[in-house]
Image 1 (spheres, rainbow, N blue to C red):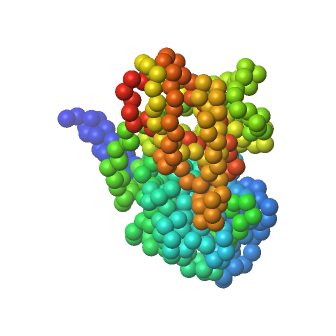
Image 2: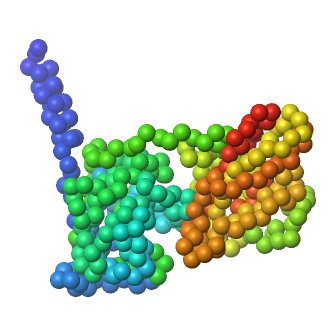
Image 3: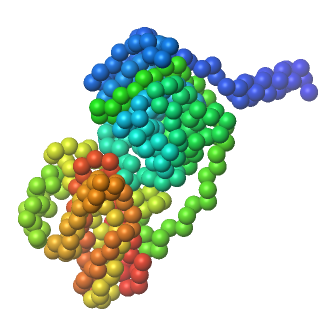
Length: 373
């Protein structure tokens, strides 16, 4: 081997070893001009013996940050009041990012915290719930708690106070991995104090958690929908049958469902007063006249039309049934569709308030039918 080739090999090994080393953490003081804060209220103040950022009802972003994979660390202090406060990463804009937040009022409960994607400024906690998205953490109130979030590709894990064992392993982040800003969040009128914020960009951070084997998909799970543009829910008030005027001007896009069968309409649609309802459509080709059961779930409200006729209208809003009802979505309801021979059009008008705009459905018995999107 020539001396030149040997030098090249040594250099390659050295560069490879360097890539495995953690990059230097960037600590961002809150009085730095690197912060962009858009909140109802914010201030830098002494709190519990250290400099802190008081954030209420908004976002604080590190303006020049570029974060794909790596580690985010900070300390947080909050009261036991009902609050939703945390951190955000891979921020594409102020309407699209990944978020982990705390629910102090649920301390020790299975939903003491929450991972959710924010698509078009709409959180999805009614669609994403359970052990993959939240952990039963017990908090210390009105004192500093250290938090570390490790992000690697499509997965992440969250450490809360205990820096050796992750409190939550997130097996699937819902956005495709893309570099973005990092920052802090305090939803609506919520508030918390933050200190010692830092982030470290790293190519391949190591996660301690492991994804569990995927659960088998329910039989006959619908895997995609045609989704219309958004429109005001009031347009369908009193509509027992859809006419041509109700369909005029609709534009359609195919939305692939997630592995769970969830179709998150916020991936496609902004939510506002003029766009709080959209149709999710299936074409069901039936070999004969028959009745088929479809199991489904929705958030927050639905009107089900089969071949333009209204079959069902339902409400699944947060606390709509009792004060403990969260409005989460699953295959818990069923309809029996009177299919005619040939082409049938199933249109679900899904209306949203907040917390998750989505639908999931399954036709277990697919004998004699074919689905088009």
